[in-house]
Amino acid sequence: MTPTAGSGPEGPVLVIGGDGFLGCAVCRALRGAGFAVVAADIVSSEENTARGEVISLDVSDRNAVFETVGALRPSQIINLSYVVGPALAADLARAVAVNLSGQINCLDAALQAGVRRYLHASSIGAYGPSQAYYGDREITEEDGCPPPHHTELYGAMKAFDEVLVAQYASRIEVCGFRLSVIFGPGRRHGFTKWTSALCEQPDPGTVVEIPLSPDQRISLVSDEDAARLILLAVEAGTLPVPIMNSGGHDLCGEDIRQHLKSMNPGLAVSLCDRPAPLPFAHRFSNALAQRVLGFSLTPLDIGPDKPRIARKPS
Image (cartoon, rainbow, N blue to C red; front, side, top):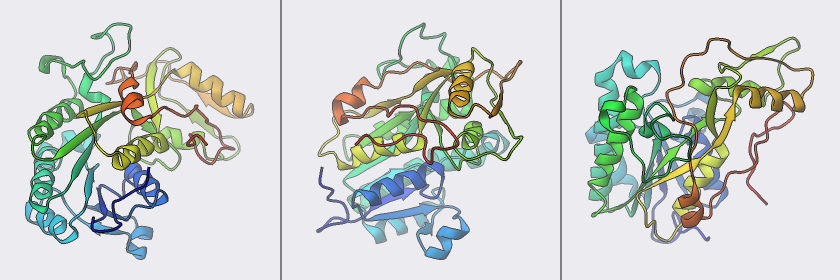
């Protein structure tokens, strides 16, 4: 599809959280497709700051959000900002200010500025902490986790974010993406930071430690695939659904170990005898994204000789 954002009368695509791991991938995908992009983040890498590619924005600062969105007049907003990991529980007030109030600030600013479309990153965490609740089947967008079953703050917040965004659906086109656990080269934070070592040449004698047991399962989606899904939504003429699963590669620890060994027989890979329980389910359908956007996962392609984990199909 031919992009319209950033050309003609429409403004750029504003990517909030644009200097994060997924945000950088989304900005690359958008720019590669010809979109004018403005990336905003509370902090910026030194490299991006030097190039002036990221503007400073704290979504918890309502006035700053309104000023930024009002000045840019973006055609679409993609909100990827979120407090995650240990920082979430360590400062719950800050997490609520960013994850919940920040979402409201961005939506209200989008309405005032006449933004055409608002996209946001949800998570498979919205389905709760366990596959057992759903049984041995693929989870679809019609499924949901009752509040008492939410034992993880992150997933509960993502689920409530979806409720908040839905309140605006009659006034602005909105769509969220329940993303599987994102992995890729260069990841330095989060549960899957270990995947960075899977696509970067390790030093001799390095042991790649995977924090999974041999039979423990996880749903993985590459940064490039997640970014491509969001790009397809930006390019779409209309989005008839409010939420979509990305789907993911449903793998166990031994699957990952065997795949790595097949790519690099000399690589030392260790699994965990007593891993921590994973706070996610692992079987997800992305049939809706396939039907609405023509999206499908690219084949899993991991290895130290591979510059990227997944590639867009030619």
